[in-house]
Structures are given as structure tokens and as C-alpha cells.
Length: 157
Ligand SMILES: [Zn+2]
Ligand SMILES: [Zn+2]
Image 1 (tube, rainbow, N blue to C red):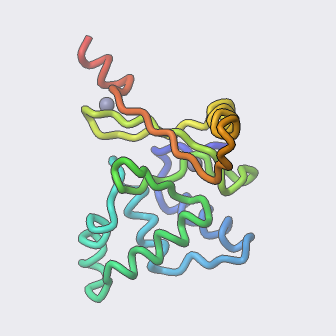
Image 2: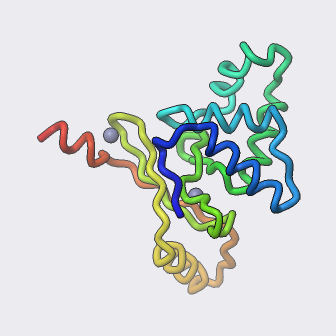
């Protein structure tokens, strides 16, 4: 089951907390707040943007607070880092039966800034195969595509 971006946030946070608990992790208040900010944002957020948004609720938050929370959320597959933007987005594939770490590709719209998550296991497999052909042992790959999203294309037409 994939999770739509337009669902209300609270039930999604509750599902995330349950998923963490099943794996023996705890979605503490600070982790939940950071995840809520990422879910509510229309665009990927960097660590410092998150810190700014967290400050009103947590005056004593530091960059380290944010980085620790982000690390936990990534480990549990609740968010992804978009390397090209050095920013974070919610994983939209984090359904109950979905493996909590998965190969992912991002489509980055240069006009409206939205990032869409794609999961095509064929892409991941062919990147790995091509790397192995050179004798390289791949551990982790990110595929990020810049362009114009469908909504922006429609607006132009
Ligand atoms: Zn994902
Ligand atoms: Zn767009």
C-alpha cells in the first residue's frame, strides 16, 4: 500500500510510529516533530530549514538534534535524502508490507521544486549490473533526474 501525500498528517505519523515500534524503534517527540515538518512541506527541506521551523516549538534544538532525528528517520525508511538538493522528503512507499529500505529514483522539477519518488527495480538492477561489469562492487546508488513535472508541463501547454 502506498501512502498518498494528501492524507492528513496525524494518521500517517501514527502509522510511522507503529512501523518503528514493530522494528524496535521509538518515534520520540522530536523525531515525530521533524517527520511532521517533512510531511507538511511541499518541497524537500534541508537540515537548517527544519531547524528554523522547529525553533518555535523547541527553542533549544541544535543542528545535532536535527541530524540525529534525520538519521533515525532514514534508517527506518520514513524519509529519503535527495542528494542533489541536500534535503529530505517523506518516503511515499512506506506501506506496511514494503521493505523499509528500498532502491529509489527521484524526479526533481526545476520549476515548482517538487520531488517525486519512483521505484523501478529495473533501474537499480541495471545500474548495479553496469557497475559490476567494471569490477566495481556497488553498495549504494542514487538516481536523480532533473526536469519538468507533469503539472508544470500541462501549465505551459
Ligand atoms: Zn521510499
Ligand atoms: Zn513542477
